[in-house]
Each structure stands twice: as structure tokens, then as C-alpha cells.
Length: 500
Image (cartoon, rainbow, N blue to C red; front, side, top):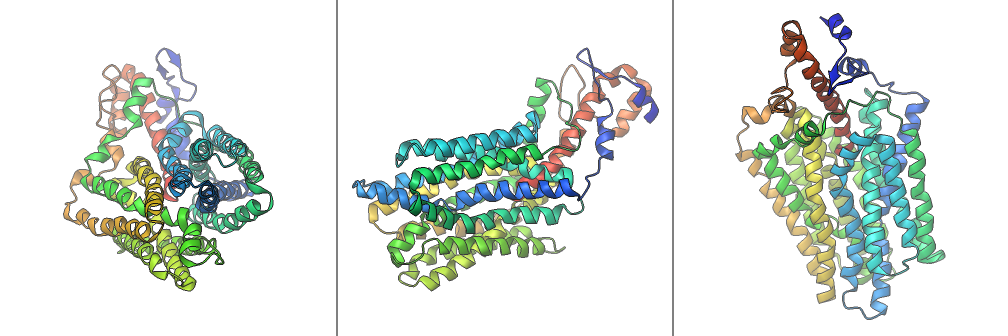
């Protein structure tokens, strides 16, 4: 049977297909799991992810700088305007992450990463000519840098699956540590640059650093062939997996997680200004953010290990993370005048921040199955972009109205605590057989094309068709092979989303 398969020249839409046995080739592919090229790819991925999120997590330094300038002009909306720049950056990264995944499928890992590095670096460089013009910075720094970051981030993690298999968990852990490591470095580097070379050259130096992502893109060479492209009608019907939205447990999770993140980015953006106003001007406003980065790294390692334990409830761990994070944010205004207690609160918040981030992927796998996890996480990241953008901006409005961060931080802590309790609703939903099925199984029974063949065939059924109807094979097999390759590619992309 296999020999007859190899001898058949598959024709789709009247064009001979050069790769007629891609599913078999993909199955035989095995990552090298080491070697000089693999380790270089790992280091480049570490650099890409660390630099992008190091800048984003340290954007509170820019917020403090913009606020001071706007306040010197007696602008009554100084805090909200400054916060909009940084919150748009994070929001755009999350909003465009699903698009980045689709673009990676269309044009490849190298091109998408290179394009992302070019846009992000260009946004930084153009920002150097905006000086303190916050309106222009919302586009150049907020949207352009965020878009470039999203396009570079996803493929830079997806490439790891091409070079590692048995060591993929360790490598992913090392690469995910890049964001925490660079957060510690960038918070002090950006502050030093602003004081030494002023804001214009700060953006230019950052643009040069971000341009290094384009160099990393050249290293990201996939080791297995790209899957065959489907026709446009088939692409539209298989690009989005709507079956995950029939999973009530996932729907509850997808609604409550974004709701819980309304206050998540507030400490990152407002912390330096918060320290200046609530503690003292002499205190180091960068240290709490650094502490969050350090313990976030520890949290990823500790809770990542706990989540792998057989009887551990991953959703409960995420609930615990949300509750503690919200509580710590609400307690920060209570630390008025006591910098050490603020550091303690920041350390606790960072620890459970790492817990929340490291569990995004595993929870999605648990709720939606192996093949549904990629799009499940992609959808939820897109939904998270709204609260991540609005949270710091609304906190800025409250500060402008009250000249105090008390209400802003207390209100920021409420959504994660409420969300943590509301997530118990998932336990009230019975696990139906349909929700247990792999998303791939549900896709196999969707109508792909009325003219090609109705319902993706199982391999057993396909083999029977080979002997009974050779003419139908020429139409059905390209779609089966393409779907199999797409499943493999999605399998790799799951890693990219699981470490955001």
C-alpha cells in the first residue's frame, strides 16, 4: 500500500505536486536536539524575547519621563497620556500575536521574524525624532514597536521546535527566562541612557539593539519543509477552529482571564512614578520592577514544575496566582512611606506572576486538547490585549483626577481577585465527551469543500479509498497531507504561545 502511494503523482487543480508524501517526510523528521546551530538558535531566541519584553516591562521609566515633561507644561491629563503609550505597546503585542502565527504559516519563520525586527526597530528610530510628542509616540512606540514585537516574538519561539525535542522543555525555560533577565537589565539601562544622552539618543540606541533581531532572523532556518498550501476556500475553512468555542469550560476561561488582567500591567507602567509620589523621590523606582522580574523567573520554574505533577490542578494554581497578584497590588498603597514593604509586595507579586504566565499553555492544553491549544491560546491572547491596553490608561485617569495612586492601585487589584473566585465556575461545567476530544478530531468531520471531498478522512478510511477509488485519491490526499502538516506545525507553535 505504501509503495503504491509513493508511485502516485498527486494532482491538485491541474498542477503536479512535487511533494506527494509530505506527511511521511514530516513524520520521519527528528530535531537534532543539540549541536552548534541549535545552541545558536536558542541564544538568538533568548535575545529576541528578552530584549522585546525587557523594554516593554521597563516602559514605566518612559512613563515617568513623559509625565514629568507633560506636568511641566501644566497638562492636567499628563499621567493618562503617558500611560497610553506604554499600554498600547503591550496591548498591540498581544492583539497581533494570532496574526503573527498566521503570517508565520504563510511566509515562514525567517521572513516574519525579520519583518518584525524591522518594524520594531523602525518604530524606535522614528520615535527619536518625536522627542516628547506623546501623540506621535503612541503610534511609533506604542503601535509600531508593539506590532514588530508581536511579529518577531511568536516565530522566534516556534523555531525551537525545529531544533529540539527531548530538551525542548529545558530550552523553553531558558528562553522564557530572557524576559525576566532583560527586565532587570533594561530598567537600569534605560534610566541611565535618559540621564546621560537624553531621550532622542535613548530611542536611537534602543533601535540599534532591536535591529539585532533582524540578524537573529537569518539564523532561524527551519529544518523541515514547509507544508503544502491549500486553496483559498480550504484555508478560510481550516484557518480558524471554531469548535473550541463550543467548549463551555474554555469559554469561561477565555472570558475571565482577560477580565482578571485589567490591573495586571498597572504596576509595570506606573511603579516608578508611584514610588516617587507614595514613597519618596530619593527611593529607587526601578527596584520594585526589578524584583518582579527576578521572582517572576523563579515562579516560572517553581510552578512549571508543580504543574507537571500528576494530581496537580493547574486551573487552581492559576486562580491562586490571580488572587495573590491582586492582593499584592491592593496592598502597595498601604506601604506608604515604607519602601521595604513595597519590595516585599513586589517580590510576592513577581513570584505569582511567573505562575500565571507559565500556566497559560498547560491550561489551554488541558481544556482544548493537543491540537486545539494553539488557537485557544491565540484567541485568548487577542482578548487580553484590550484589558492590558485599558488598565494602565484608566489608572492614569484616576491619578489625574485624584493626584493619588491609592484608588488606581486598589481598583487594579480587584479584577484579578474577582476573576480568581469566578474561575470556580469551570468546575460547575461537566466535562462532556466532545470537550475531551482533540480539536483535530472535530476538524476531521467539518465540510472542507463541496467539490473536493466532504469530511476529512481518517487514515484507515483513506487507505480503503486507495484500493477502491484511485481517482478520488488524487483529490483527497493533498488535503489530508496538508492537514497533517498543519497539525505538526501547530504542534510546534503551541510552544510559542505557552511561554508568553
